[in-house]
Image (cartoon, rainbow, N blue to C red; front, side, top):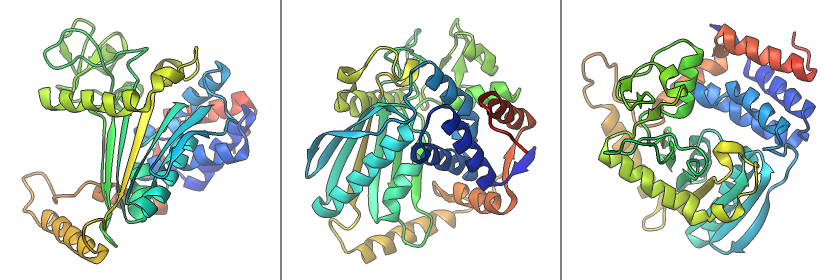
Length: 348
């Protein structure tokens, strides 16, 4: 493993994206989001996605200089089209609008359609938590062109990873950030394991014939995800398809090859509500801190050093990587340098 300065990586991502048609603002937003994912240890949603984004631009699936626009707007809701630009840009706008409306109306919802991959959902609920808001993100629609998950009790693929995120402010403490795919592993984690020559945990994937496997290449060669938690995970996965694609109405905005196989029918909902709707903010934060501290003080099981609340580990990793740099495998760094050279960006 080698370590790279976060600012160096941001600058490199910006330069690559501007070489393939992005304006600075969009390139800066993508770089910010990707490097932040690496900083908090969610490397599956970090800079290794860059080659995919460049290929999507070349194939006309993503318009790199597109600006999102508001299609429908009320005091408590917004529907936003990303105009087939980077999902990071339209998702940030959606969360910003939902936060602003919830500040005035106590609760608000925004949804996005016609947009690319939005990256780590946890980033958006963290935005709301910093503003004293509770938030939820539901993302669906990925299976309309390419199914990847075998449902509980089923023998063929139907849905996709259908992720969700929940963010809760805890004052000066690290916010509670729940962020996961409703499959046992995200697609990015399986593909990254294949790239790194690693195996995945048992119970996460099956091969093309439906047999359990730990080889990520079996997934790539026609296999499928399994939902986490068996029937419970599948129930949540299906609910998110309703709360994402169907609620946002993204089917009506699908357009040819735009968005590619993954995002052409993507619909994502952002729900935000003030944490002090029913009690003073000071009371909410005090009780929240007490609950978080109570969990952290639970006696750890064997082979564990501590019980963490969701978001704690990411904070620890970020503190380390801000000081010592972001670790990348030689293969990841060489691929990013190769991509830069291909588009005409020099790398020292």
